[in-house]
Amino acid sequence: MWMPLLFLLWPAAATAGVVLLAVTVGSARDRQWLRVLGLLLATAALASLTQLLSSVLLAVGAATDGGTDSIPLPPCRVPDRVVSEGTGYRIDVLPVVRFTCVQPDGSTFGTDEIPAVLTPLTAGLALLSAGTLYASRGRIRVGSGSAPDVPERPGRKTSQRQGT
Image 1: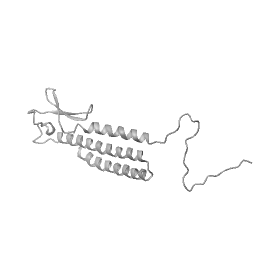
Image 2: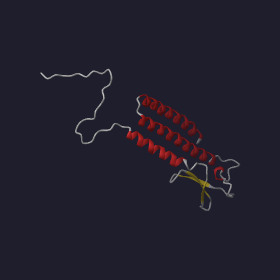
Image 3: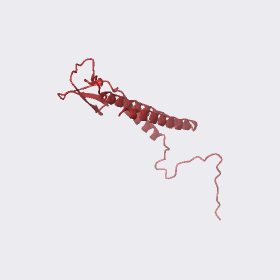
Image 4: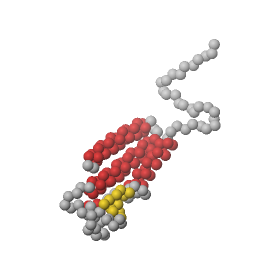
C-alpha cells in the first residue's frame, strides 16, 4: 500500500526540483541573485522533505509488511533492546518526525529509522528560502509619497503628450 506512494513521490519531487532550477537559471540570467539564492534554498528544502517523507513511508511499509519474520516489527529491532513480544508503532511529528515503537504494556521507545536531523533541516531550509524570497521582492520607499522608480525596458518608447 505504501510503495506506490514512493513511486509517485520521487517523480513529483524531481519534476518540481527541475522546475525550480529552471526558474533559478532564468533569475540568474537577469542577475537577481537574492532570488536565485531563495530558489536554490527552496530546491534544497524540497529535496530534504522528499527524503523525510520517503523515510517515513519506508519505515511504515516495513512495519506493516507482515509475514513470518514480522514479530517484533523490523523497524523496532534495536540492538540494545530485547523485544520478544508483538509491538505497535506510531509516527511522532513534534518536536521531530520519528518512528516510535509501542510495546504491549504501553511503554515506548524510539528508533533510528527516520534520521532526526531531517526535520530541523527541512524547516530551516524552508524558512531561509521564504525569508530570502520575501527579501528579493521589489522595495517600495515608505513615506516618499511617490511611486517607486521603475526602469524602462530597452526598446520601449514612451509617448509624450503636450497639452494644447
